[in-house]
Length: 246
Image (tube, rainbow, N blue to C red; front, top):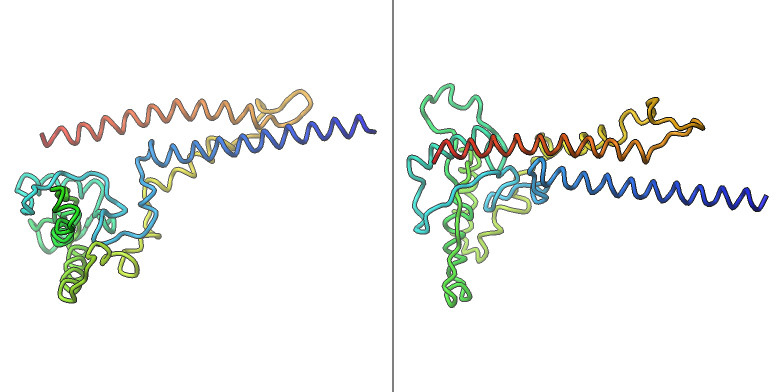
């Protein structure tokens, strides 16, 4: 009896260890998929601030240091980025916005941080002392979010707000929990490739036991190969897209 219980105990400990290793492996793969393969940011999980880089921001283009608006060529690039990835604040691609207003741009080149925020940051004594200027980028922003941002900043400036950077966050931020994004595919991809079809005939051992660890390793290798191919194709598409504007 002692020998039997000791054997069972060792078997249980081995199974628990394999289960924990499997869970850790799945967590790591999920994080890598979300961050690297699907090119999503952990900050994009939170609601979008109207005065900071939004949750849907993907590609930005450098803005001039003199706070000027985007040039005509930059506006064309911003319009193309917006069609691909949508408004950096709310994610809208404005698909039906130009039905009544043909020829009107769907997206504005939004300074991030906004001009008033950048000017206030540049006035801080540390930046003035060291000569550090805030660098800005243009991101596509729909007209609705642009109007909302302008209203919030105008109201805050009139009230003498000392930290304009925080004006667009908190209760004023845009909640995007019901809008699907490519990063939401990470969990489904990992689940399908790691535990799907685990009880297929190839996974059954001589004693009829399901070999979960071996099946997981095989699916991880398959997933890694597919992930590399998919990441390569996405990288080529983005590179070709950016090269078309050079």
